[in-house]
Length: 259
Image (cartoon, rainbow, N blue to C red; front, side, top):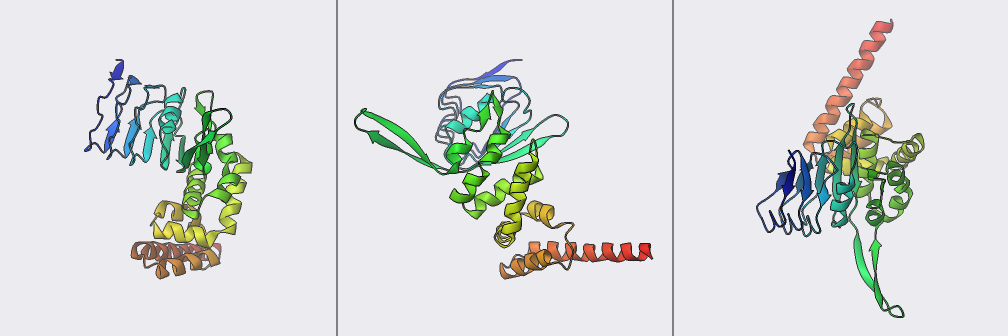
């Protein structure tokens, strides 16, 4: 059954915090969610939805877009991001359990007057402006997205870089070997800063990805534990101690088996 969300359908709803776009939706009307100032998450059944002008405009807390089916047309994702200047995390599910997680960084812009031509030009600042252009032929252009990493390393701070890197390595959908190497090289060069961010945010998923498999008494584990203790994060300290204990038990068991 085809479904349309009418123009201004939920505009000015200050209590709306998340919204599931119904299956079968083909059109989201103009300013349908305009000025929904508490809206932080939207769920899309697919990406082939026509987006009316300003459908999600002035939704300052919108920070998560979750798409159930990424195959086919993803034009609506680009159209939604077009109205966004804040940081957005996008999760896309694909067939065969494929999944991607992408961070679109915050950016700022201004209009600069071109006096001789009597026009104003919109100029964006920050890598986020370029990340929004990572679409080609109605799909996310992952090669272009990953190609912006060298630009992001210069213009963005550790909190943004940490999440871009973690998302792409943990969910490596269409991640090329070259891009993977570039992300891992940054991790190797900045483990102290990245660990401090993950620990401060208590991001156990990222810590698990980067630390499990490391020697329990190795340099990286020692650095992680020291950082967690200095930042006074009991939950992370507990996780790290348990991980180190399990690592030692595993090593001990292996040695006994070998003998």
